[in-house]
Image 1 (tube, helix red, strand yellow):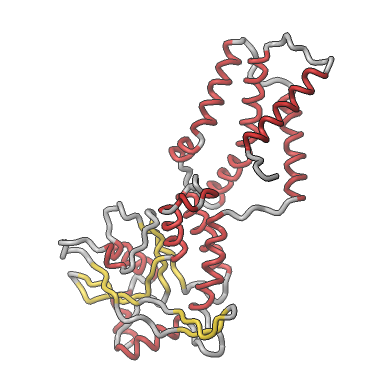
Image 2 (cartoon, rainbow, N blue to C red; image 1 turned 120 degrees about the vertical axis):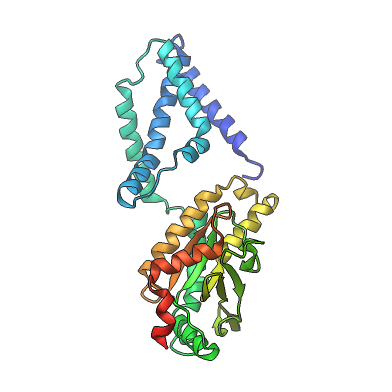
Length: 329
């Protein structure tokens, strides 16, 4: 198979069809071949898009997903153009868009596709793999107690509060997912300069380190970052927050895409959507992590800075957060 590429495969398939055409005595070469090709292009496009269209409709109805038509059109631009051109060819050839063979073709496709799905394992997308790896390789080590060395994330925050005489109004790990993929070393990068009227982030001393033996690595250390949100009209608000490291990795992959030809045409938004959806579902299903981790989507081009977005998130989780410190005292 060395040296065999997509061009070779396509050429072999064309030769295969030509061989059948020339060798068959039942194929009428005098038919309007252009119109026939156009008709079957329309057929195959409709058959091919039926499944993703059904998935999108299901998400819209059951998961309240928003259909991004502009992104869909941009992604399928060539397919849409081909469909329109083929439809115009049929129209000017005075041929019907659909013939009796469409139903037969569609049923045959469903049967074959079902058989293929039963025989081959489902493909894990890049975003889904990122989410599973992040949960099992990181969150599952820093959130639940291991019953031995680590007391658990929320107890870790409680100890930190007692030691520093401060209060975290929401004892959750806030994981920031940036639209741009860029994850700075310090979250104060997302503060608005020369805007003292806006809240801002400042790093504090990290939470106590977590030491575990993992995959042959002895005394591996994990830690979570603590930040304070300075507010112009109130006392600071403390929280544990950090960027999702897989998003940072994806940023570097995209930046160095010449090294990764296999994902050269990666759709960043699709990956982020898959990552966010999968990670949310996994956290919700986990008894150890549910209610202890909060995903925060942040668009660096939005009108709000990250500190404002985090305050909105805290307020949504704990509307009475301003009085939490007094209540705990």
